[in-house]
Image (cartoon, rainbow, N blue to C red; front, side, top):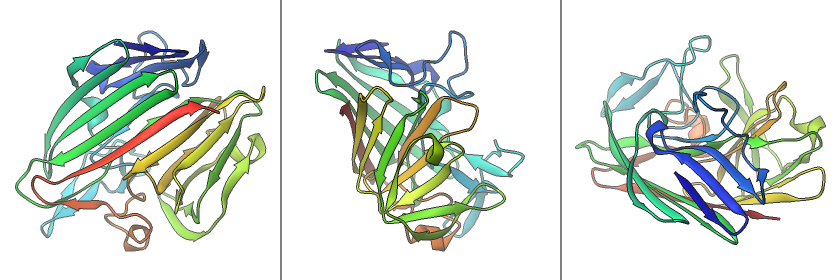
Length: 279
């Protein structure tokens, strides 16, 4: 699926979790393009949806109605379940035009029963991305969602983020030890090797490339206060991930104070949106 408007062009893969194969601005890769034939969920490329939780669940555990459920461990070295299930599902294209598409998906994996709806639209001003998640089960269930983009990061790229709180990480790569922070404003010296969570985020992130051009992200709704940032060494990528809750918040009350998973009653939903535009 290809959407295009003005200088913006996006290619999505509805059959592969509605991953972004590419996003370009005036021919320039904003996201690191997924190579032909590559797995969109295995590599430093593209972008995918995280739901019905984001980041890590320690031991894959989530408790609903006093019962512990254990999600499949897909980070065996850590013993964690990572990023949810919606990225592995085929999505249905409900509407598609040259500049806008509406897609949906449904999940039934105890304790999660939910539907998701995504609207992606391009315009001369940029890309908008709106996601909703609705509990279709018969029990109140903690749920969360996020977006995991692998932005292209040429050497010298700078990221600017304002936040009130930053987390450390424990031996299992789960956020811990929240402490006050002003956010970050730095290039390679600050970014390389960074893998952390910010709370009290103001919903805005600016990525500036070495030539002075760049993009800004503006998040609203459930994505307006929590952000994961990851810049792996050995990869020319930068992940700036708006999320609805702190990592493993359902199991760690100290983390939940800075962004809890929403316990959705049957029929209830959460909504979030993101705008990406030229700086």
